[in-house]
Every structure is written in C-alpha cells, then in structure tokens.
Length: 362
Image (cartoon, rainbow, N blue to C red; front, side, top):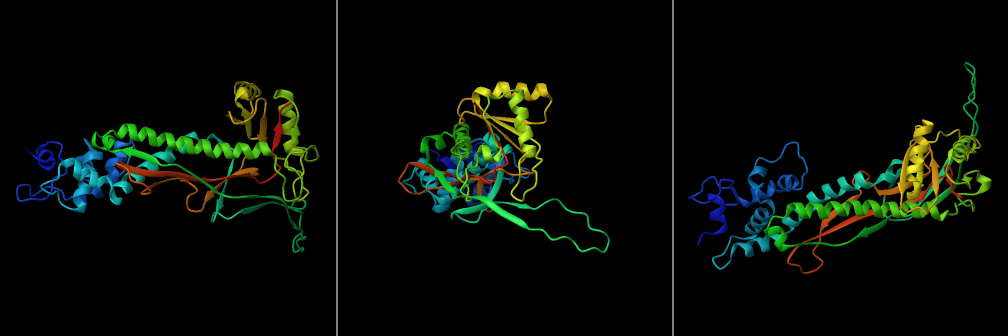
C-alpha cells in the first residue's frame, strides 16, 4: 500500500514528499512550512502580493498537507505510523498552530474593521498597559490675539478638567478546530467561523462603547457628562426641529478654556428604531452628517457629535502597537484536544473624554 507521501508525489498537483533518491526535487517539510502562511492566506481568501513560490503546491489541500509537513518536521514517519498519525502530530506542533493563528488573525481583523461601525465617530486612545488611564479635557482661554510687529505675545493659560478614567479589558474565548476539519481541508468552514469571531469582537467593543454613553458617568469635576447646565441635552424626539437645536448647541456650548465651541455636527448616532427616519432626515436636509445606528441604544435615543478629528468626545481604548489590529489570535495549549486550539481575543474599552456631544430623546 502506498503512503501519503508517495500518493502526493504521484499527484500532478504536488504534495508533501520527503527528499529521496527517487524524488530528488521533492520539497523538504521545512520549506513547505515556510510557504504555509501564504498557502493558508489563499485558502482563507486573503490576497498576498508576493506569495511564497511553494504556496501554489499546497493549494489543493493546504490544511492537511501542512499538518503532515509539520508532523514530518518533528520526526520522520515511522513504519508503524499511518498518515493520519503524522498529521495528528503536526496539528499539535507550535509551528502548525502558529500558521493557523496568523492567517486567522488577518481574517479576524478584516471582519472587525468591516463590522465596527462605531469607529466612524470615535477617537482611538492608546494605552501603554492595562493600568487605569486618566483622560482630561483641555482648553485655552480666548482666541489667538493680534500681536503687532515686534510686540510681545500675550500670555494665556491652558485649562485642564472634566476628565475621566478608563481601563483596557480583555475579552476572549477558545476556538476548537477539530481534526476532521483539517484532514478534510474544510478551509472555507474554518475561515467563516474565524471571520464571525472578528464581527463578535467588534460587537463586544460596541457594547462597551454604548454602555458608557448611556451610563452618563460623572467626570472628575464631580459633574455628570450630560446635564442641562452643560447645554448638551435635547429632551425631544428626533425631528428637524430637535436636530437643529442640537446643531446650534454644538456651536454655542462653552469649552473648558472658556471659548465658544463652534463645532460642526458630523455624526448622528441613533437607536435602531430611528435609523430610517435619521437617514431620511439628513438626506432631505442636505446635511453632511454621517448616520450610525445601533441596537444597543434604547428606543428613541439619539446623539449628535462633532468629528473625532475636530473635537473627540468619545473614545475606544487600544493597546499601543495594536491600534490598527485590535484583535489577536494566538495558539492555545491549555487543554488536551484532538485538533488545534486557538485563542481569539480583543483588548478594548471605552471612555467619554469630553462633554462636546449632545444627547437627544424624549
């Protein structure tokens, strides 16, 4: 009976043969593992600009062939071992799990970015570690005054206040990829599951963000974020009149340094039941305002915010060096399992950083 190696050597698509006198041009397992990242990326539908030259040799069965190569890299196939035993050994290796984790992480973050609608109106705040992070609104007094030629510049001051505290949290679970999925090369099924985890990570971050918005926390000056005294509440249902009132409030509210904010409205964030009405209202009024809807807001709730590039009011937390790839996928060996264990995680949090936003709703 021929071995898996011999069958793959005879296959016109190539395979995972070991070097031998009979097959002088066969690829070494280490070389195939080096091509594994690009081969799995292709299997998961991820385009690579300059794929490894050997990646195409694995395209018919990348999961099983890489598992077999990883098993051979640990030790040669013994006379008493069948092909699946070698694959099983390869699945348990750090090399194989690492390849799956790397390809999965790209897919997870791609889906995260597509699903994270809330990022349109949020600032991204970097954290050095998981310790509590203090934020503070800052401002300067007055506008820049005219200074005559050779005149002395007029001194001013920077005001700090109305800050808040936030902290990164980790959200994670274990993904179990069973042996039969790998042996049968069910790359599409694995890729779909991994992508769904990216969407789940985005929903998790959105849940934290909208919970912070609705909690109306107390800032470090002892006052609530939303209060009539701050001019950032419009206690009316969303319509053209209440939206106009909120737009005017963003313009006329007072900043920390004592200046008039004069902020243009850029984002209208609404509860799910208001999405159609909000989009219609903005369109018919010809406003350059982006509408974002969420099921995580109570019925009738709406918020009006400036652009985060102009005046960030709410932010999501990111660990430094992972601001553009917030989701991680790591190999996991915390339990015995007949297959591969991956640990997807997202480190995130949310915070209200300023009062420069309007809360609406009857």
